Image (cartoon, rainbow, N blue to C red; front, side, top):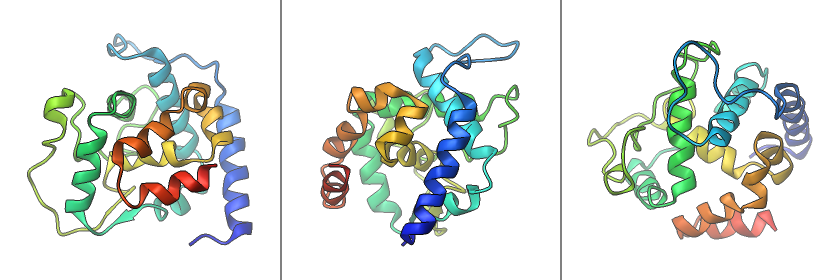
Length: 189
């Protein structure tokens, strides 16, 4: 639970940080060639991760998504592995978060369930290793992508306007079709 005033402050801080990143930054930087991914997804992940990495509210964000049931989360990500925009954003997340050029390397956790090189058919398999630890934004990269897609639309639009106009977040809730997704979809409207 986040009190309304704290939620507004968090939203304002994220909006300010995302605006500072701007939509005009190049999708990739550095001496290595850009990965073979849609440029808009690379740019979105670069904007999102740079904004969060430089935000004082990162610790608050780190407490927003925590998962105690790894089996249920595996099922959610198995369903999302068939949703192409989510998979492409996860691949972009993996590329950007491991790039040394933006100073993000080591700042964000690796993907735990969807491997960056996985195809939709093999992505659902994820990791076979069960973990006793609670999953959170501190140890599961897919949760950073999911958080981006669960942000209010005004914040999503600052990261990548197509997230809103193409209804990517709505596609995520439809792909999951779980009982928790229905209330989330209702809140978005």
